Length: 420
Image (cartoon, rainbow, N blue to C red; front, side, top):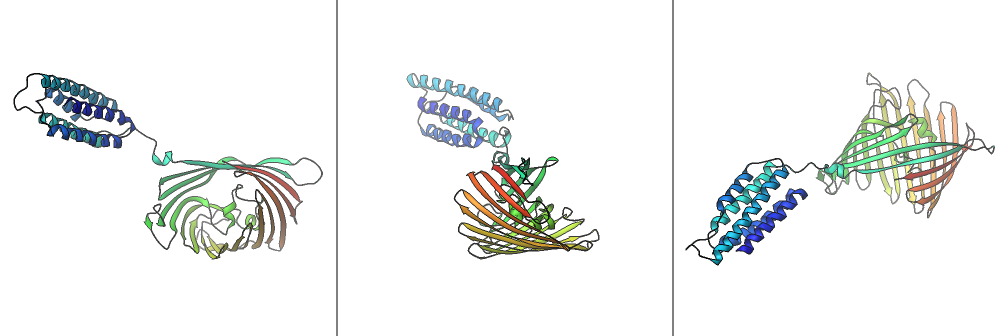
């Protein structure tokens, strides 16, 4: 009998110590306590002394409290009462006993205690404040680059400068709902470069609200983002762009378009669709812009795409538009890509142009070349860029680019870029 009650005391002690570790673990311990009580209830034992004290301990637990320390104190007092009862029972077992006595009443009262305690824990007491799951799963990453630019080959030292610096924050509020934010550096200091909420509505796996066998991923993105026109937006961050400079036509047509709005996307095994509605002010004097891109995986390592965007004035009339075609090919260690972009303007000169780029990978080294053309009205600008790079480690690269420009002095650019 005493061993059984000691088992109850031990379980109560373990339960108390686990309160700080979480209520789920405490509930599991209560199941073990109830198993001991079942053994006591079925055993032929003498009547238990001290039931009035145990009842008072039970009554104290009926008074709900939000203070875990207070609940801990009440629980500790009850432990002492159970120990005293155990001692009294041990004395009865070694001396005179009352005929027909048992401890079923003790089992009933302790069972009531467990029920009351479970109610207190589940309904009356909240666990200590904890860091939200989304914050505890917060991922922090980023990158930065340092450049040296020499535009005149006269033996003088080049100009040192910071290129891009960005801190990226990512959290999963829920596996089906992701939040991303980028804090980016520019000439005026740090500012918000992106802030998006991604609702993963349909797709493969449990990280979507609904599952689908045919659609890999479908969702809605809301916030500030790099507008998915063409394919160069994938390498706006310097950590991803193997050549230091951006294509002329990208700079001239939409200037690495970043905007505020909403976009929807659908991706299957062979196709990729995206449509967006954004402000459009960063590209022109538009009040609103709408557009999208369709991509087709034409074969192993081959993707073709077409993009279209329209810009509307305050009267919702089409003011200008962008049309683009893109292609990417990957063949082992060699990869090539290119874009053609045409921008039509109502009251200004149209612009058009293209670029073609190839890159060869040799282990930790790579070589890259690009030819770019920009036509603005009757003016034509060309640039030939060639570069080499060395991946010191996966997150650190050293690059060198030489530019031959038709409308400016030739230049040499060195860059150190590191991610974290």
